[in-house]
Image (cartoon, rainbow, N blue to C red):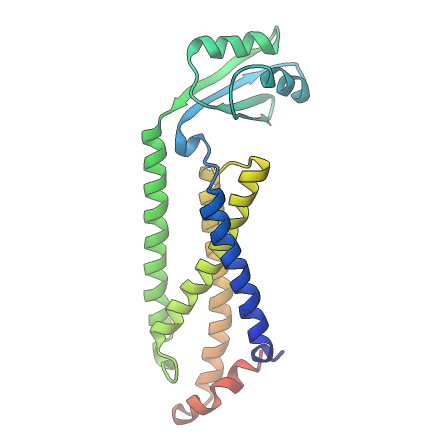
Length: 227
């Protein structure tokens, strides 16, 4: 497939998606969960159905909360609540409700998670640039090996921005929260994005190695058209 023939369409589509994602993130913001903002986690077992418990909790003054099933128990995540509110929840759910876990995550932990997530992403980005530059050092004509590294990061940022933009939109309209698992998901996307880019670049490197170095600049476009 001659991808260069349709490059303007691809660039336009990617540009629109990135702009919309940035707008969504800035305008709507991210709906951060208690992992980042602080809150309480209550795990309990009950014979009541999920729908019935959800209805009971909606009648309590808990603000925004999430309830999900986990094996034979339920996990409730909500704003910071005290012991009295916890007991009120247990009593409202019904008899036979047993508390298995109750703890509170403070905003300090939320700040620590954000800092570690940012540091992890920055470290990975720098490591990628150096690794790709080193791996492509023998095919630095007509494109220097450093540009391969920065191109990899651009593709990575493109994928990450779009994902964050989608979740900002979903968080504003559907109440989807950003938790520590979201950071894990971003790292997974980061890995797949890098893998896909490296596969393409590796094919470019193989093709360039088959061309005399003096002719690489002239034949570079033809190398890209071979995909």
